Length: 190
Image (cartoon, rainbow, N blue to C red; front, top):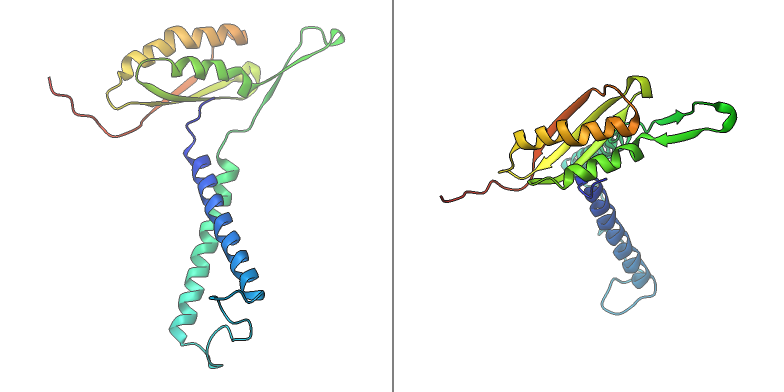
């Protein structure tokens, strides 16, 4: 569909950063183990002394661990609910002659691609949920600040949606359209 996927970019960025940190830590460990000059002495202790750290330091470590744990749980929950369930429609008039299966994500790709060609539209994401006889279409359109939402909605309703209904052989297709503005507002001098 669209290359506009902020959660995906964030996931890749965080994983790349984590990979770099782990790579650096591994390199530092190897360098210390082999005693390369200028680094740490392998025979030295990790922290000076054997006394217990101050109480505030233990509370700080515990608080940071709890916050990191909650952030990790939040990230995991976001991965589970990020995309609607992928449905497969079985299109068959005569089961003895075979069957045709259509993934709903595949069905809406051309629809979203068409909307992305409209003036003022930066990206479009569409999802088709439910069974074929009771389907619902959800469309999220990312537009520029100065885009005409009325014109875009009109073209979706009169051009793209009728084509999708015809391609899917549906008389009616309940549709929810959501607009999201992208970028900063621009000021024009007239």
